[in-house]
Length: 249
Image 1: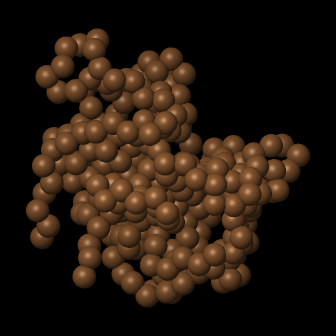
Image 2: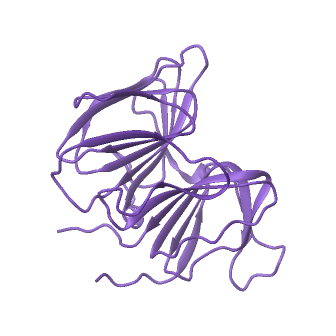
């Protein structure tokens, strides 16, 4: 049984992300250490290994490359993202769908912008450490649930990380946010709109505001924003619920 982390809540703003251009026409903004950028104090959070915001210009994309022992979930914000892998899966991922690739023992895939006439494709991609290594690769593409509130995109037990889940948080303008699930690690990434909150012990009306690309990292069951409320345009955010951290050895 892993030791519960101390309660902590930290804000990470979009402009603080490390930016790279790994391919022509590709802009990536990284939340954690990645590729040639290494920050020993920011290698992961909970079981989350990467949170990348990607923008692919018309005709741009990632050439075939290999992943192994990584759970990869993709959420498209704008445009159409083409996926193809060496296990026979080919699909176009659009807003309102969640794509899952369990790389397992190894999967080679490519990703590209197929909307050359409509401009760039933007998406958020998460990499999660699995419980099981060397498993058979698998793939799924499915529609996200509609409506408002806290909506589950990949529930506990669906991923190869049995104690992790990905949720979509969607709330209308000025509305209070629903209670977040209790977990040792929670990672909230704003994709549209904004939200405001205050920290424990802080006065009402004084707090923080988050916009697209900003994130909250919450560790320990008590670390939650106080009085969180959606901004004037509402808020859409992706929330990871994780009950353990990355394991080595």
